[in-house]
Length: 122
Image (cartoon, rainbow, N blue to C red; front, side, top):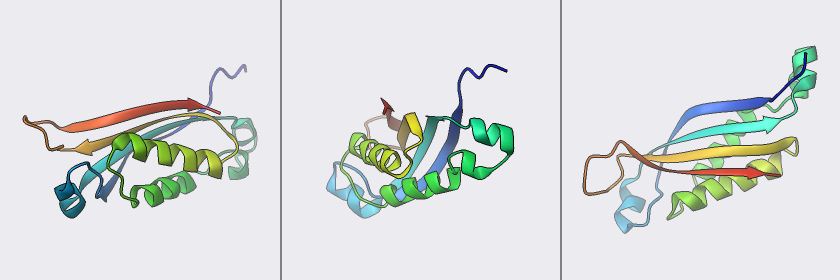
């Protein structure tokens, strides 16, 4: 078998947080979703069925949760902080893509979500 790509994903992690550029957003808060796609070598886990051969997605979710609790004005900043924290916490990460969305953003028309996507390589 020739492995082409190995990714670990967490889809639609949901958090209540207080991000936003407007003062009212810091008081009221909103629901946010985070999607993450991590590229890392999980060959040992594929072969051995051992968690130590991959990145523990429960630990990834915990890092994201911690970062979502820190208020930021911009989704871009939230995504950047989460990305840096994950790179610092998991040296095996080769690349990652993160999407942070705010549900029902305060805009002039009905909108399910606004978001920011950041893709990085180590």
